[in-house]
Length: 79
Image 1 (tube, rainbow, N blue to C red):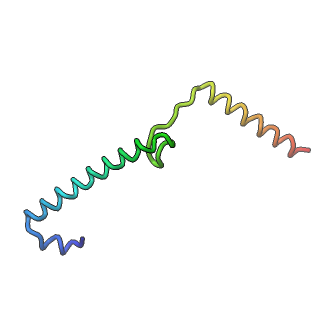
Image 2 (cartoon, rainbow, N blue to C red):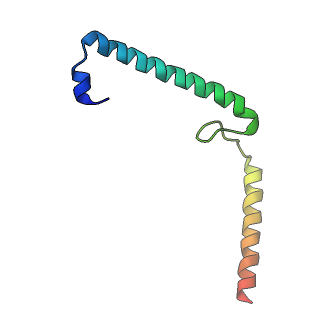
Image 3 (cartoon, rainbow, N blue to C red):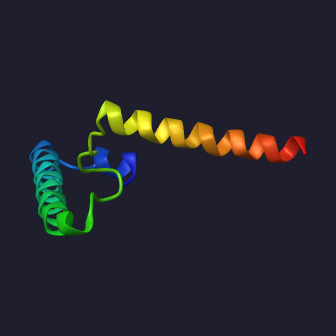
């Protein structure tokens, strides 16, 4: 909607438009919440959901494995 169109509306109509816009936003957030809970079995939705926490031991294990892989790559490169 253009600005000059908004200037032609009455105050009552502008209030009604604002109320409808807020209702639409509220309904959209409810819809996203329902859609997010339905898709929870397939993993978190893009841009939302909770991330899994990884223990310090698991992070350390992954780090050591990555370092070992890179050491192997560097050793092969020197040959």
